[in-house]
Image 1: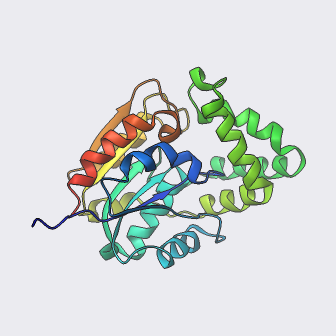
Image 2: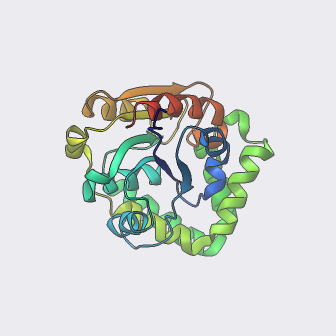
Image 3: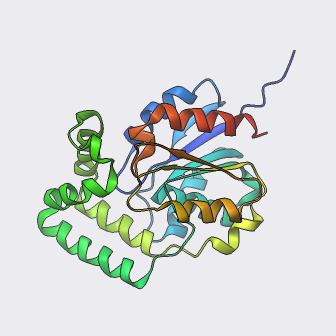
Length: 237
């Protein structure tokens, strides 16, 4: 009898996201992984701490897929415990550190969140999802619900963790496990050059760009993301 090579898959959400952002992908991948779980990125003031919390609750060895903030966390997980990572999928994310301009903008958003969080989420929505999904309850409605349920304090905590992230570009060449980079072709926060940079940095990594898709690809186009991840996970042993 053949022994299954499937291993656990840990999915990491983005800023103010929860398991709902990965729901469609998670359901599609359940036959491809030994187990599928969603990490909790609401614990820790720095990205190091957030990654340490995920590691403390993760299987001994696993494949990890990180969306946006979850991608920063996935790279930090590789930095802290590379021997536990059997494969990595980086989704609409970046290996670059935050710029001073980026940090200043996040501080402004934190201050705004404390006084008018719902309005801030509405303003950020066009940057998070493709224009064609702005009036789609299955996408825009879910994004608003996740943000509302997370709340302004989690928003602030996660933003500060994001600001603390390390420059992961020097780390990329050390990644030896199977890797893919997945992105929405129309991601306004992470342009194609950022994803191409990661692919160049990781030996053997493949790029999957999804058409008519913004920053939250797993929520916007779960079938396409799952298809890319299924091929990747098949190569993870």
